[in-house]
Every structure is written in structure tokens, then in C-alpha cells.
Length: 130
Image (cartoon, rainbow, N blue to C red; front, side, top):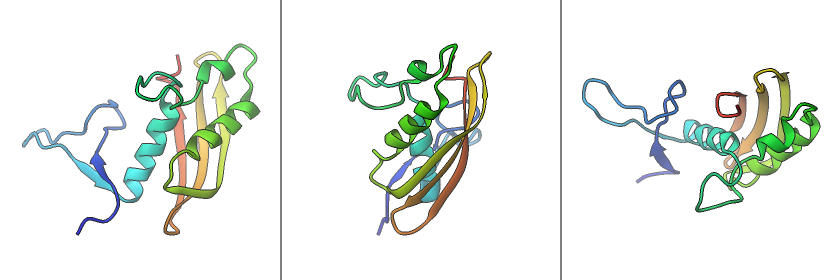
């Protein structure tokens, strides 16, 4: 019996499918790692880039201009994370650091996964937010 979602693993360094170099098999993840990956992908996406759902993702450039609106971005990140039905209240996101020259930021993220597991992560965005 399968419990929860199972999905393909994404390599955090390359942002591509994680594949065993010897067998060619793809890796599967489930449980906490699957939720973490889903939330990270949701937050890293630019709003509208996925043509099946133009409301998916964060409108990064609306917030990361010359005069960055970090408090507004934190609210936007929380609202986007709340769209994942596996997360329950409360959800907290706090931008820990922001480099305006590269638009690279670190987000401390805290949320509860249905079933009671605590999700405490630090996400770094920047390569996608150029």
C-alpha cells in the first residue's frame, strides 16, 4: 500500500531529474522530502511560466526591482505556499538575506505538513531570479 505522494526527485544542483549514473534509473521521493521539493519548486517558479496554470508561482520581478519590497515578497511567498494542500497553518517565511546586485535571497521557511510534521527549511533563490 502506497502512502502519500511519490514523485520524481530533482537534483538540487542541476535542477534536473536525479538519475543514477550507473543504472540510469530515476530516483523517487515521498513524504517530507517530496513536500519540501514541491514547495521549493512552487516558490522558485515565476508566476505564469507554467502555461497550464498562470496563477502558479511567485511574481518575483514585481518585488525584486531596484527598491526591493521584501515585506511584500514575504507575504507573496506565504500565499503561494498556502496553495499546497499538504501544508497547514501556520506558515511563516522570512527573507534572511538579500543581495540586490544578484537578486539572490535566502528564505527561512516554517510550515506544518498535514499529519503533524514540521517543515523547517532554508531556500536559496537567485539562479532562477536573474
